[in-house]
Length: 228
Image (cartoon, rainbow, N blue to C red; front, side, top):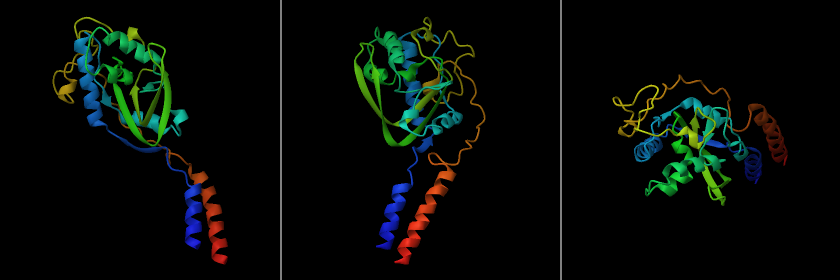
């Protein structure tokens, strides 16, 4: 009985971290770059860049402590949130080009911002719910237990897409050799991933001082239970 009371109290006061884990997302990134290739070629986009995984972008996600914090930042955009302008931009690009993935692409419009160059994702311990309005002003609910962000641009408009010969408007040239995967060949070369900057916060959710405060009543309860 003593143990049961203690465990119940501990489970009540110890918060579960918002971020479960972060990963390199290699398979997800391969698929996204492949889709970017398809749009580049199918819609004749001249400035579609290769996406690379950037662990420093994970730090931006780790700063988020609840679903309310999942939003676009100063140097990144979050897939699935505040997506009206992004969906409108992507819709105008692909509406003249029928493809079986069109619906899925519309639901993940951030995948196709042509000049984004970095990507990161983290998995959550809860499901966040977001609402968005599509290009026809219909409202939808989007649920996700993963946060995907793209950098370094914070805005997304139709004017971000340039048209002509695919890959003809690449500032740093085109990926032709040493491709990250075959899915990146032909995309514009992006900047190199910067060195990792360690994330200094100790906990993903509850600060150490808060944990210390919560431990005190736990110890107090243990002493009371032991007294009986």
